[in-house]
Every structure is written in structure tokens, then in C-alpha cells.
Length: 286
Image (cartoon, rainbow, N blue to C red; front, side, top):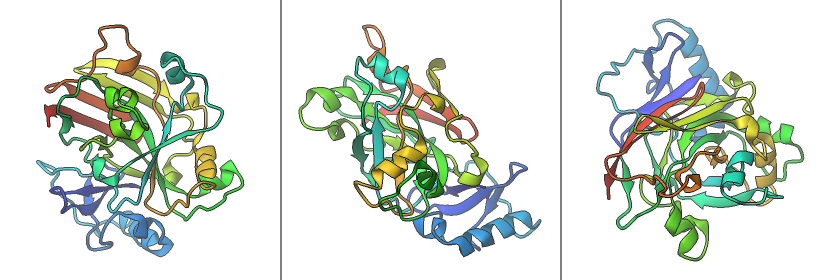
């Protein structure tokens, strides 16, 4: 299923994109797309049954309708740094022996086509297309990557916007350059795991002002999705509705020759993970 949330920011309602491409209202079936829904097998079964029954779910007019983040009430966003062989190479970094972790606050999440704000004084705002993993079952001390995959509810396209000066040159951890407002566009859809048979076979692409900048595949991940979930479960409990951003392929501004083409107000970024939907953001000054 392709689950999403539509409407004005803070007042989104649940919806579903059916196989014919029609937007359907889910608000009569479930209150929201969130961790509670993803952990409730009976509620998900009701959604599936309604989606399979013609006429049960009302159609929505998509004209002018904002698409919000496909997941509400996100618990935590755990991010994996330098998780693609080619990106680690362009960054001049050694291949990590273990996953590199940092966090983004849930309030960085915006819709897939919402405005992204360049922080005041920023000189090095950068782009990163990523596969986002959404947890559907509580994960603690998992033993295998297969168990990790079994705890995934679905997948989404994510944009891990980053400010490199704040991240690298201002001391402390990476979090300074990762948590500016609007720095995690998510969506348009949460695609349930049954429709993504192999999360390690997904092309990812990103364009800046129409120019292709990133063109990679999740097959390049150093730590694949199931292993990432297993690994994280030994350092923290993962709950339904938690999100994992699994890293970005080569092609970020930081890895380009001087002068590096960092983002500025007025730029337009488009990105997609194949099968998970496309985003488009115009950048504006904060």
C-alpha cells in the first residue's frame, strides 16, 4: 500500500493512493498514519480490505491539495552516516567498521514539496537523497538481519538536508548541521514493506535546478537495511513510528570540486527513490 497524509501542516488527514493512481480518504477507517497504526495488524487489515473494495474509500480531489509527511507523531529519527561506498570515497573517509549514528529531531520533518529554509548565515547547505525506513514492531536486541527486516513497516523517500560548516567546522557532533528547521522532507508515500521485496535494489536520484547530481543505488550501502535495524536494536529500543535515514550515495555538494555548488535561496531540488515517490522543494532564506 501507498499510505500518505494530506492537508495543511499540522492538520493532515490519512489517505491512500490506490493502484489506479486515485487518492482515497482513509479518515473514516483510521485516525492517522502513525506508529499506532503500523503496530496494529487488525487496523492495517481494515485498511487493506477497504482499499480492495470498490466504493468504500471516498476519492479525494488532489488539485491544490498539499501532501504532508506520510507519518505522524514520529518518535525518533536515527541517521546512518557514510553508509555508501562511493559517498565515503568522495568524502575522503575510511569505510566505517560499524555504522556511524546521529539523530535528527522529528520537528525537522516537512512534506515532500514543502519549502526548505537555508539557515541564516549558512554558506554550505547541502543535499542528500536517502532511503528512509519506518519501524513497525518494537525492536530490542535483534539477532539477525532477517529479524531486522521483519521489524520494518515500510519505506519512504527522505531528503537529509545538511549544513556542512555547522556539521564539521563548528565543533561537537554532526547534529548541529542536521537539525535546522525543514531539514528532513519526507514522503510523499509510506510504501508498505510487502511492496518493496528488496530494499537493496532501489535506485536513488537527485537533481538541483534540473541538473542530475546524485544517481545511485541502495545496493551500494555498506550496512544494508536489515543489518542497520539489527545493529541499532543493541544500542536503543526502536518503536513503531521511528524512522531510520539510511545514508546517501555519492554526488553531494561537499564532494564536488571548488567552488562547491552548495544550495542557495531560489534553488530547486528534486529527488526520488524508485517506487517510493518524488519530492520537489524550492529553497528560501530562513
